[in-house]
Image (cartoon, rainbow, N blue to C red; front, side, top):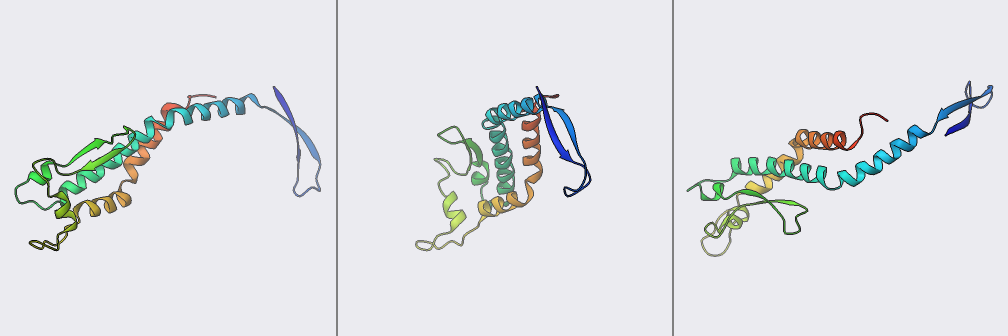
Length: 149
């Protein structure tokens, strides 16, 4: 399909107009490719970005967690949520039930100051995880767009 467009040559309307012909099928194919990308990108690439961001948080949190026995550090993991649509960084298990006390502290019985290992890891990841997230994003875009239009 050919589309005829009139353009003004020479500035703000004072020049000569000329007819420019362009092929609109390229734009139609690009539009379809972006619709396909949206359908593919919604699931796979966003999960990859979440996983990359979660891995950065987990790595930094394991560096920052205070260690006495090493059990809390060893209990850190990256898991999918119940809805299977997101990832979460978790610390603690049935044997290690004090991750929340270490993170936020305790005021009542045996006061314990907070050690914000997970909060600081999230702050670090927000500032420094742009590289892995950009790579996951560009990989998702590259995989979902065709090579040629």
